[in-house]
Amino acid sequence: MDPANFTRQISGTLVALAIGLGLGGVSAWYALQQSHGLGGISVGEWAAWPFTGGKDADPYTVAKVARNGTIPLGATEGLAFEARVDNQGRDLDLACDYSVSGVTPPSKLWTIVAYGRGGEPVTPSPAGTSSLYSGDVLRFPDGSFRINVSRRPRAENWLAISGSGTFHLVLRVYDTPITSTTGLARPQMPVIIRGECHE
Image (cartoon, rainbow, N blue to C red):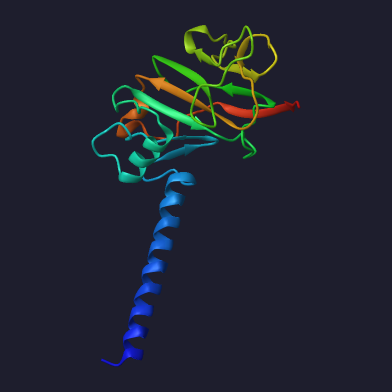
């Protein structure tokens, strides 16, 4: 075999292999970081993966859950919605105040928790809590609510945060019809609106 031809074949194979690995790596990164994955649903600023806790979860969803370090709810238990941005698409920032208002999908109960960048619950401000339970939330006559996410104490429903950097909110709805395949129509979700930001 001609050495020049052999070198060309090896070089071509290595280039094709490098391109394949590069494209594969980029597509895997995108599936884990940027997309909602296979079976993910998005409602406004909220995203959820209904089949994460089931035996039919796709590999990208399983990898996303493993990377986040969360334990998924079983398909019959409920559904966890995650929000990392406000209604304008800006990252949630611990230096800013937010209003989370509206209604949740129908459920027996729900919780909302603020988590830091590393997946740990946000340390609340003094005298506050970084999680709320639906039974403790004050509501308007029409059943809607407003939760004030802030470092500073707020009247009514206050979800206390502290620190700096980005964070995300997780709204878990338990015993809800939207976890069934027939209930996956677009549910109503609260809106996250940014208020003032402080240094």
